[in-house]
Amino acid sequence: MSRPTVLAVALVLVWSSGFLAADLGAGGAAGQTLLTWRCLVLALLLAPFLPRPSSRLGARVWVEQAVLALLCQCLYLTGIYWAAAAGVPAGTSALIASMQPAVVLLATAVLYRRAWTRGHVWGVLAGTAGVAVTAAGDLGAGATAQALALPFLAMGALAAGTVLHESWRARPAPVLPLRQSLALQSVFTAGFTAAMSVAGGDLLPPPVPAFWVAVALAVAAGLGSYAAYYRAIDVLGADRTNALLYLTPAVTAVGATLIGGEALRVSTALGLALGGLGAGLLLRQGSFRSRPASVGGACADDVGR
Image 1 (cartoon, rainbow, N blue to C red):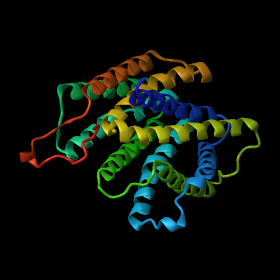
Image 2 (cartoon, one colour; image 1 turned 45 degrees about the vertical axis):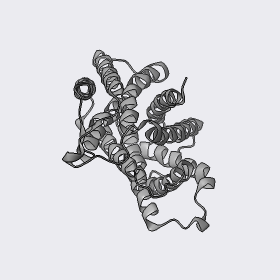
Image 3 (tube, rainbow, N blue to C red; image 1 turned 180 degrees about the horizontal axis):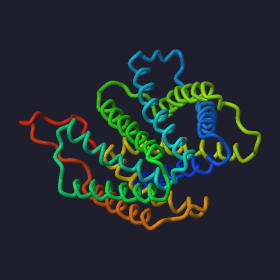
Image 4 (cartoon, rainbow, N blue to C red; image 1 turned 90 degrees about the horizontal axis):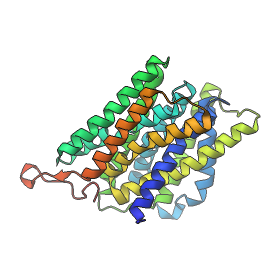
């Protein structure tokens, strides 16, 4: 397989495992406790890759990394873990999170003046319909609207971070290596989640081995998923990377059924099928076409190039 194909498969698998880790850990401890220790352990593992003091990073780099950490990790992870603790199925959280293609495609089309094709429109509609069908089934099965709002908020935060990452990467200014970027963001995220746990009285872990098993799974999923996600944006572009996330709900739902014993409802299966169709249509289209320069020009670094 080619490098982009291997990267795409790896992203789908490790991204799906993150939802499963949050779902499995929700039964043994508060969602915030599991999230905090996941972030603390991950920050400790990545600490050797932090930039050296002699590197003299400018204030702009620190601000950008803090913003990306807030959007792509702090807010995104908090929404997913709190949703799992509130009883939202892992497959549903994954499906809602996979709405990012619609949000990112719309944002890049507006910001970078790129033309939509008919395939883009049908792909977004199919994926969004899949989310709507699944969410309606969960509401009918007893899930609350407040709980379902959490993965929607998480998805919006990650989509915003994705667009910012893509636009900042397009600048001619030097970019931090991936390992340093992940290390900095992990430290920011660990501090954020620890502060929230202290404020809510959820910092101390339960004295059960199962909790640390869940933490280990969450750390492995987190390290792999963010590394694959940012690398995929650099290699495949933001639009194709986010289109791949339409494929993660099916993998997550199958894993939750096999590992966690979650029932796969008809509405969920239909939603997953529509999400897969949306992903296929979006991936087939590839990148947006740039509009003619007479309408204002296009971004120098084309998404998906």
